[in-house]
Length: 346
Ligand code: SF4
Image 1: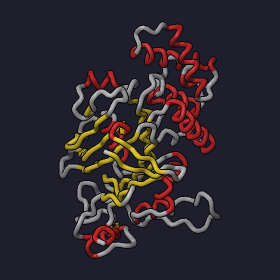
Image 2 (image 1 turned 45 degrees about the vertical axis):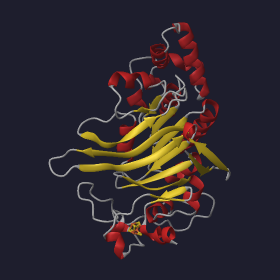
Image 3 (image 1 turned 60 degrees about the vertical axis):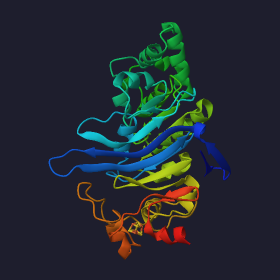
Image 4 (image 1 turned 120 degrees about the vertical axis):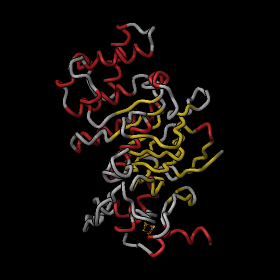
């Protein structure tokens, strides 16, 4: 299987099946509740290339956090994956592994070495009563039992250096580091065992703008150095436009548009994407009036028939209230919007 993709530099890459590190197909997640189930994620499908950064963006309640916990198998009841597959393809050429079906023990052996996670709050990821370096030593030695403690400490110091933290900080406790340092330390920790895929859940939310830029620059530099793929979730589209190769826009639990960062910014196909783009200051133009998106996201227990964005959409048509638009490929991008139906039949 092959598909083409427009790269950030405007070139085109041809991708083969062996270039795919993650293949998510028809993933649906629900939360059981006393009444109707909450459909937090519905029929989510995408592929991630090796070394690619895929941004996932949406308002709160769009399903992006549920997607992250499903991808990493960190979800807890009442969340249940009701259908779909999340297939991880190891670079070693071994057969793909469906993470949805994986037993906990097999999942543990994949964590850190193949798939790692950077959480929104560094304090949730770091043990507050252990020295930072010791936490690296633990991770490194669990996955490589032949590594001596001295070698693991040396590696911890090297990894901290990669994210701009001086080696002597390895002996600090998490509370002795600044918020930005803690977050950079969790990124270094996520990379300790050279994973092929790193899932990042709003990793820059708790830091100031200057630190945010530094962290993004470091993620890009480390990605070039270690060649891992990233799924980066955020509510901030402007941040993804600087970081991501492609962006998936989520609304009401579904991907409604998937395109290269450039295409998404220049020519958004879905009115919701356009609304998100116009909600933040332009990247390279004088600031004019910002347009917000009127209304609020729908109740995921009682979605309207047809397009879930219809009550807020400035381009809504009769058919939008009757038929749910499905994510449909259009060239090297996809969108779920009836505005583009005609292009398909032309
Ligand atoms: Fe708007 Fe209709 Fe497109 Fe939905 S399908 S985004 S309501 S134009």
